[in-house]
Amino acid sequence: MTIFALGVNHKTASVDLREQIAFSPEQLHQALPALREQTGVREAVIVSTCNRTEIYCHGDSKDGPSSDLLLGWLAGYHGASATLLQEHSYCHTDADAIQHLMRVSSGLDSLILGEPQILGQVKQAYQFAKNQASVGGILERLFQQSFHIAKRVRSETAVGENAVSVAFAAVNLARHIFADLAQASVLLVGAGDTAELVAQHLTEIGVQRLTVANRTLVRAEAVATKFGGQAHTLGELPELLPQADIVISSTASTLPIIGKGLIESALKQRRRKPMLLIDLAVPRDIEAQVNDLNDAYLYTVDDLQGIIEENIRNREEAASQAQSMISEQTESFVQWLRTLDHVDVLRSFRQQTEQLAQDQLQRARNQLAAGKSAEDVLAEFSQRLTNQFLHAPTRMMRDAGAKGDFQTLALFQQIYNDND
Image (cartoon, rainbow, N blue to C red):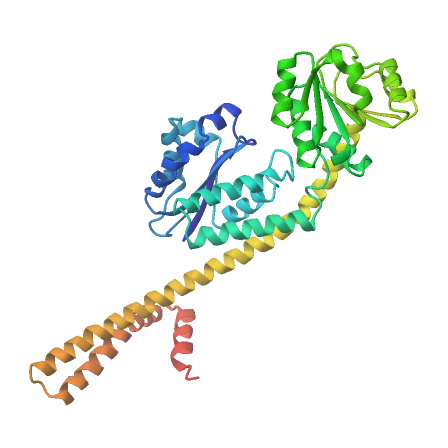
């Protein structure tokens, strides 16, 4: 049996190519059955995210699928150039394919090392394929073991513990300073992509009081509505700042929009209750002089960048530990596959010998029914059955003797001299 992992990701293909061969949920309903119809494909799972599209499948060793067949099917399904796809794709088989899936599930193959979202995406792809009756015993066990090792990597290493994006680093900083963010009031200044990502991280860790202030109210409302917050314009900052425990700013302004005087006034209204201010903008949104104020704690992108670089180093060290765990799990799965091959050989051998016995038994019954003596029938039955059982081994021993294959001869001697 053979396991394949074929696809493209952020390291091998451009965004344009990744978009071209991505599968929508609607497409997967037709794509999985179509993939299963390809020669030798017995089980299949398709993982499709913004950063990767991958096909995992299992087929028989003799008449199973080839990498060219799978790549041709993927290109044909999306109307893409097979030549271009081949240049920017990868194909892993057996142990390499097993290890690749475990690395993907554990976040070791992600754009951001150790990011946790990919595990949920792989689980979703597996469950979808299972609901489509596209998962059998081999991929069932493979994906379950991949989920198991991903959880171990997450719990036993630090690969996902440290922030490596500016947005997440800002939220992580706030989480370390405030004991209970659920009770904190957060003001986002700006409503661009960075602010939206910050809002997502904040809601994921339980922030309930979120306000978004932006130059245009429409954009502020779009972000605020998505995360259950309130929307305002930048002109309302003097009224909003005194209510904010945490201010995270990320606008595209060329000049600071939050000055020292504005924060000094806010602190007076807060009766000196401390404020955390995180400026993610370049150029800065918040005047550097704010740091001169008591009870105002200002962090900039440069401050966070040092944290991020250290965290990346920590993640890389943890990834090395995680890789060792994945290698062990891969070897364990490969050993299990080998036992299946062994079981298949035994099953085939028993079926063949049982069929031989049944054929000779039926011949003996026919002879008895024709009136032949039981003694003659039994003697012929025994002789014919023995000859058929020994035909193949005898031929192999003769060939081994003629070729001087003493290893094979020694193996036969061990088999037939073992009376225990």
